[in-house]
Amino acid sequence: MFFYPFSASALLVFALSVAAASSKGSMSSSAPNPSSSTASASAANPPKKSNKRGLAFAAENPTDVLKGNSSASVATWVYNWALVPPDYIAESGIEYIPMQWGAADIEKLAVTVKGLGAKTILAFNEPDFDQQSNINATFAAQLWMQYIQPLKQDGIRLGGPAISSGPSGLPWLQDFMAACSQCTIDFLPFHWYGSGSGGFFDYLYSLNGEFPHIPLWITEFAETSSNDSVVLDFMNQTITTLDGLDFVERYAWFGFFRPKDGSHYNLLDVNGNLNAAGQVYVDAAKKVVNALPNPTGSGPDGATNSAGGLTTVFPASDTGLTPGFATQTGNSGLRVGGNEIVKICGVGGAMFAAAVFGAALVW
Image (cartoon, rainbow, N blue to C red):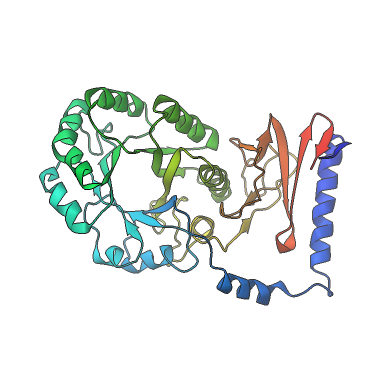
């Protein structure tokens, strides 16, 4: 590791000059044409599947599921808030996780799950919320012991109730766990919606601190901003970090559907193809690089970026792009001990990362 004294402004100029030089060099006439080699490499080396990344499938067109399980997709599981999948999901070749959404028809759970040959189930969708399954915590514990706990004898993994991130979520779960002390909870799902990754990680780590011995699944989460760049930045920060956390077993972005009601977090466009967010989340072969924000930190598209650095969105499967010592923050940059990292992504996949430690440049 080498240390060179630089001011923060000099660092940014230096970083941009390195990126420009990399770009110029890669575009010279003597450089090989990357298109054919990239295509052949992709065909010979299909992307590695992610055992964490899944699809919260809310699409209305049956053929849309094919986009989630193409040869380029890294997703490995899907759920649709139902106990029995429609044929087009059941036949898609991607693992289906059934859900006992609420209390209705729970007496049919065991025979249905065994008939599906399921190895894992989800239970009770946002029982703390009166507009979702809305189940009293004590009653939910009784239902669990009567209908869900017996499935453990068949080796089925049992996912706990999926609470919301609202004020009622954690208190409901605490009451449920107290009332269900004999319940086997193999993992705890939860949902989160909001703006800024800081709030997301605060909630994630608070649940891990509350239940440190139970793995977590995030079965719904999304950045609710109406700015596409903000949504992409949030996705980049969260999935990159989640892939490296041992206590997070699986996660599913909300959601896998075409745009509706002015949404900006959908993974499909109006024609059912992967949009920019879908390419980052589902298709590891794709990479999206946003525009450089202006010096005031406000991007040309209206996105704010307090870092004032390049905003780069890339698949979490691109190992090596995120320094192992970095921690994610609520803006589009990365921080190391409170200092900003400027990420430069050059043509041809070159990556340069610099961090300001006081007046020192470290690389």
